[in-house]
Length: 79
Image (cartoon, rainbow, N blue to C red; front, side, top):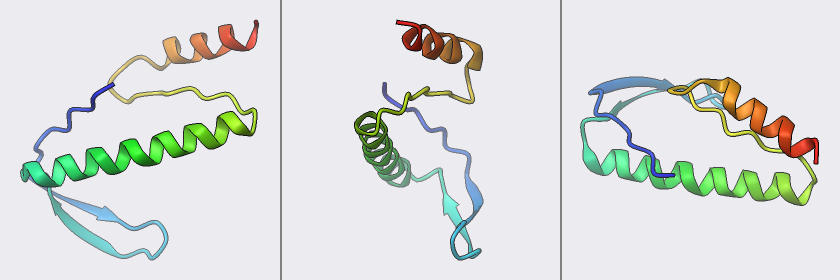
């Protein structure tokens, strides 16, 4: 599934590990492309780790109804 990140302009983000704040210019196409690649790589890695560990995965998006993803997860578990 291809992610389309919108150019929101400058956004302030916080590094959860260090607590440091940074400003990111999301209007820059290259910045959005790099984030998209980073997200996909990390998501694929996490999904693989979960699968090897026998953990079910439900992808829940913020722009869609979460109920469908959960129903799909429960149906997979039931078989």
